[in-house]
Length: 218
Image 1 (tube, one colour):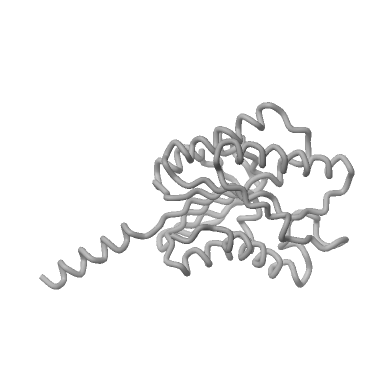
Image 2 (image 1 turned 90 degrees about the vertical axis):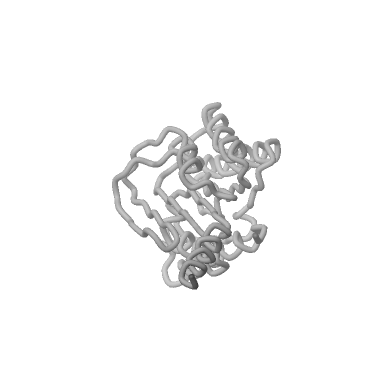
């Protein structure tokens, strides 16, 4: 009888865990994603993270195949990395995991070309998919980047504005990562914090801490 009681309480405790689903580009594959997961799990949060290098919002809408590496992590169940795999569709991930909140870490890979109406509709689709499921929507914008040209700088501003306008209009929280991150000049590749010699991992972890501090605690 005691064993049955213990099992029942254990099942109840698991069901009471807050569930967070995270989708991310390559930032989530490295130290940023690892630290964000660690912080959430330290607070007894159940996390499912899918980080796929090179992704833009369209990839999470269409399920496109990418080959820049991925990390998939589920609290206490699965932890795997690889190179080549189709990006899962956010709509299906929400159905599978039934999260209380969804973090969309996207925007960095949108700055290298001019934005189109399709980019706008993809952003809208992701936000509305989260809201349709009744989950809290949080969009994590790109961190500070060192982009090489004036055209890229204009692209960064355009991405910030587009995502900012749509998150505000649709009621999705927007974490403006570039306001509390600083990519050192003439170091790394200008995009990935892990590529910065010596201090990159720490900077990525600090970024994750800044995002975590801006989340509503369950």
